[in-house]
Image (cartoon, rainbow, N blue to C red; front, side):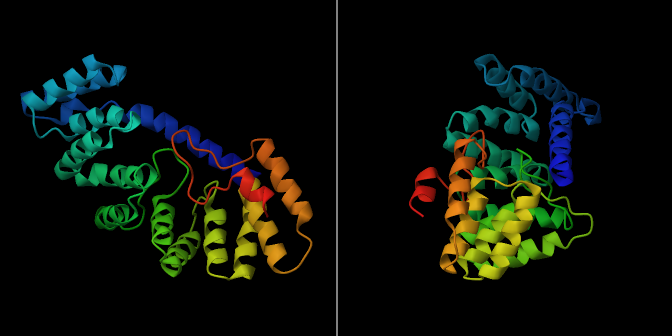
Length: 265
């Protein structure tokens, strides 16, 4: 419960930080046009997604073509509307101008929305050159970006690499576990046939936050070992119906399980 509370406190902090960081400090610019572009972008960001806002970003880019944040902010509505081609062109320009600031975001969105696992890994590798000890967190606050990197390796069937990244991360001093960290490691162990290690992580996950997917895999381990699994199956169904599942506002979580899979167990 303590870890669960810490997780939500970190989310609150992340939300506050996002609001603060959305307003760029325009005083850092010595060139007048770029300072003006920054001010225009700050104002436009307050009504993001409207045509007036996008036109304002265009104006900012026109007067200061090297202002990376204008490209970034302009890209966001395209991502939310599913126009990934336009989004990619704009975010690529933002990364080109300021990779340290935007690589993590592009990697996360490439994973989350496009399932571009190899592209995300490449971005994470580049990001490590700037932040060798801490890649930061996903935009929604669910994962440390090293966890996302591990998920990407798992998705391209490099399971041992994924396990190595997660095990090393979890041993890091003062690491703050996310809501689904142990679950993702547990599933990866399960997929490699290491059921003892899988169950160990599913049980750790249940102490942080237990949900239908995690219970489902615990029941699968029991079934494989010819043990009674029906109580766990029933609990997984109950949890699913109560809404205790992996949730994301925009997409589906990696290793998400659906009710039909639990029913067919």
